[in-house]
Length: 131
Figure 1 (tube, one colour):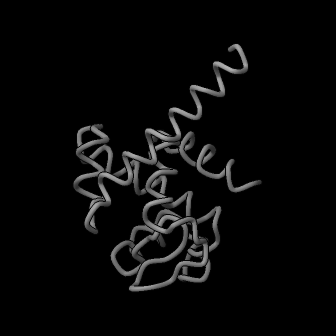
Figure 2 (cartoon, helix red, strand yellow; figure 1 turned 30 degrees about the vertical axis):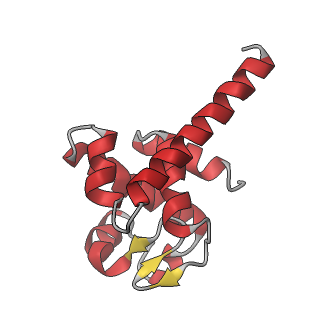
Figure 3 (cartoon, helix red, strand yellow; figure 1 turned 30 degrees about the horizontal axis):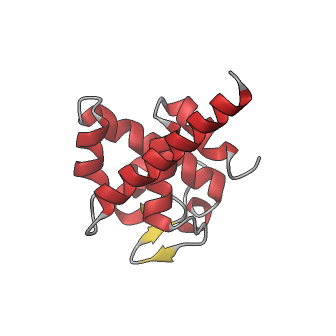
């Protein structure tokens, strides 16, 4: 499975927008699947200490940070977390991003900029393909 398929499959499984998932991934990790700094890990920049309990309960094969850093697993767990965050935010992506992912200056704006860029490219591709 290629890196482009991972957000698509994970977002479908957990019912989140694939462009939002990918936008958060780009903003938080810069697409570095080996990210391991300041207690955050992988493509989705997951905070192991903050989320360890529910991750190990709901994803029993993930019992260590090493496993959490595997790209497919990291994005899958990130999509699960995003789904939970979205539900807590009343199914409002804007509120969710502001509350859960706006953790460094400019993060909120960067996530939405990535989202708009992906949506524009997708629309252009669909129009070019005549769909």
